[in-house]
Length: 464
Ligand SMILES: Nc1ncnc2c1ncn2[C@@H]1O[C@H](COP(=O)(O)OP(=O)(O)OP(=O)(O)O)[C@@H](O)[C@H]1O
Ligand SMILES: [Mg+2]
Image (cartoon, rainbow, N blue to C red; front, side):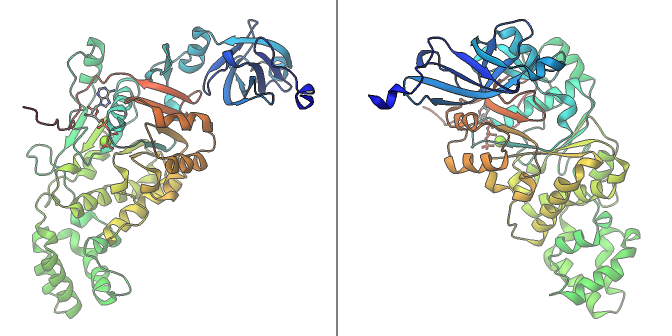
């Protein structure tokens, strides 16, 4: 066995080497092999923890070689450059890992490490000022877990949110669930959660046609600036003054101009029946944009209450355009979009879909500096426009079986160790990989229970 003669035998106990005090390798016997995502501790009070990012079998095939980053107490001067040679390591103590993952401020506590229930994981509230991508296959618990995060934001921060809710899943965010603790009840009770619903008598979800931009109106009317140039031009010329006209009088107003292009535009409005979308238009009443402008703690937009996809898109467009128009006010707002593929797919089929998607691409690219932060939830990375996903710095990944999807996520979110992404194929319901700036270290978390009731839960199979 000459080939094995020059291979170092694996040490009897795991030993760590680090030349730069930042990265490390550990070699040891197979029986002690750590998993990607685990922490190992070097002996000594000031020593850092070793976060395992890759694991392989050693060249002799008898032991393991693990590598990763040294984290934790490595900040002060000499320590940061320390060398470690043949240092024995053991599993990191829960107290040290907890200190690292929940820090001194564990307010935004999302849950426990999936394989160490004694270690809590908290997000870093100030890092919600980035875009977040929230992904997992159907039924993986995305909406449930997203609800946990929104509750924590309500309970522990003053960051206002607007929630685009296509399945009416968050319409009970202002209530408390049976079993919620008294403190959460009291705190949530003091936060203003406004739920806007189509056709609701006291809290209606609707917008004003007159407040929409020319481009948005054209999208609602399926007008192309080149193909339909005469009508588009009439829209630009005549609709500037439409603010003063009641919605139901717009057709008469257009016909009064004795202009064939205006008449064609009036016909288009009538044929599409746009002005009669009774639950879409505010008809002079207060628009959803004005409610959001008052910045309640959370504004839930119950888009699931609309019959037509066009109505959902129209309301979303009016709201996104308004937020963009006011961006220089720099008032922070988290835009939470569940089922984000509805609003920003790669290839929308209608001009309205294109207009909504393009506005979201713009917010993804430039919104951060104005305090407009996106949190997008969807089932597969390819269902959302790549120009939006690639702007996300935070990732939450729930169960995901598809290797293609995991490969794609690995390309986009290069900062997440591959070995952690791969584990998503075996996640149980409620387990999530959180990674990126908003969490101290990439971690697989079992998400804590909700304190608010879910809106639309799965329909059970009827049994005899
Ligand atoms: N941690 C949990 N504890 C208890 N029930 C849960 C938990 N997570 C999810 N569920 C239940 O599982 C079902 C599916 O969860 P959820 O709706 O969050 O999945 P999803 O990933 O959003 O699915 P979809 O992509 O289809 O929207 C729901 O009925 C929810 O109540
Ligand atoms: Mg869902």
